[in-house]
Image (cartoon, rainbow, N blue to C red):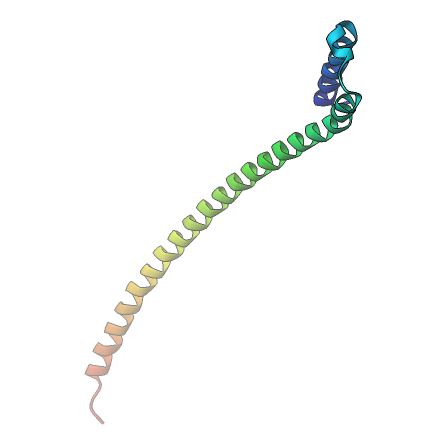
Length: 106
């Protein structure tokens, strides 16, 4: 049994014992008691599911941020390489122009 369920059962047990010990609880409607006994586990389940889904979303967001940072680094590296290629391309074009100028006209 998980901790939340044990804790919930303990609280419900104490609640029922209090209800039996004090006279004013005897007047409590049985439907209210039945409601707490039947709907309580669903409330605990809802809170647990909500908490776990938020935790998963937080972890997923951290993974996405990490992946995004890696992609930005990759893009920056590729941009540096492209800049170097463009510089080399300009040099090659200039040299080709010089060679073309040296050739005799047709």
